[in-house]
Amino acid sequence: MITTKAWAAKNAKAALAPFKFKRREVRPSDVLVEIMYCGVCHSDIHQVRDEWGDSIYPMVPGHEIVGRVTKVGNAVKKFKPGDIAGVGVMVDSCRKCKNCEQEMEQYCVEDMTGTYNTFERDGVTIAQGGYSSNIVTDERYVYHISEKLDLKGVAPLLCAGITTYSPLRYANVGRGTRVGVVGLGGLGHLGVKFAVAFGAEVTLISTSPSKEKDAHSLGAHKFLLSTDKKQMKAAESSFDVVLNTISAKHNYKKYLTLLDLNGRMLVVGLPAEDPKTSPFALIKNRRSITGSMIGGTRETQEMLDYCAEKNIVADVEVIPIQQINEAYERMIRNDVRYRFVIDMDTLK
Ligand code: NAP
Ligand code: ZN
Ligand code: ZN
Image (cartoon, rainbow, N blue to C red; front, side):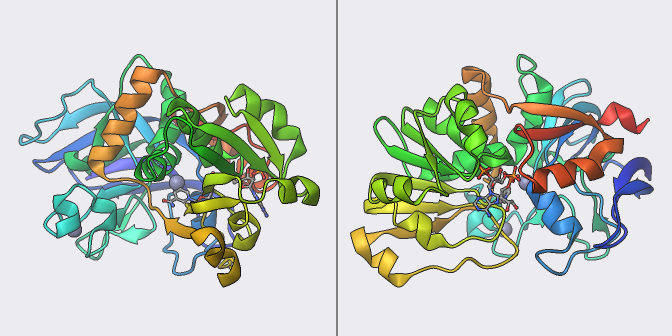
């Protein structure tokens, strides 16, 4: 077994604190990654605090992982020691269902195995995430990372990146598409970067007036203050796509009314409380709501290669692991520009 240093939550009320546990030995198709950086996703907070229910403790969160491969099993084909590699939100799936066969393993009919807060497929081992010194993962769920990119900014691509890239691609966002990105946090700021890179006309829709300047420097063409009734009224029926990344309680109706004919709201945000919606807001303009969960293995590698080609990374604030509890409080106050990334060297 491999000894792993980490920070974990012991229950929903406890602060994260130092923790040690064992990971499995490297199996024939496994890769051992020494973790360099791990991003801090709002999903980490939801799960640590048991906001979605059924959380499993002790919990080592973290699913935006970048590091260096130090060992590979004898059947591994894609990686060798020394490679820079990434691990995201998913570490396994059944590998044989119709969705796994199409490399959309996040929609595995037997459910994907998350990186943490779940049991591995043996049904007994608690999967533990990336606020830790290393991770052992089957190579299918490990990605190549270009060394050209700033690795601190790459870590958030493994969740926030693919979670925004995938629905925008699925909705065929391209030149001229009128896209509204709701919420300028970890997901939202990458959503803006991707939509701009795809050629769309991008508006950042935010509750924070202080983020207007940043929205423009990230490439957004317009800014819409969602707390301003007049601005929201004037923007009714003016978008083809609205990407909803909101992490807290809200009402879908407010954002549905922004959609023009056949417009779609792409839902990725997962607040603890189910948002209310309105059939009246849906029937007008034949609007629809589409959910989307991360991305499959093929699409995740495609997104990382696209980022390497276009030089897209997250805007990050690097923190030592000792500041993780304070970082959670700041995220809840919308005080992050725009992703915290933990420097895992600080675990030592
Ligand atoms: P984050 O960095 O905390 O950003 C969330 C943003 O939502 C905030 O910056 C804020 O932006 C906006 N917001 C917060 N409270 C709001 C409210 N009451 N009304 C309207 N807007 C509000 O969070 P994140 O890491 O990007 O994650 C966002 C959500 O996506 C979380 O719920 C997370 O669990 C979920 N998620 C889903 C997937 C998936 O596969 N679908 C993957 C990863 C994460 P402004 O200040 O600009 O208003
Ligand atoms: Zn995440
Ligand atoms: Zn499957």
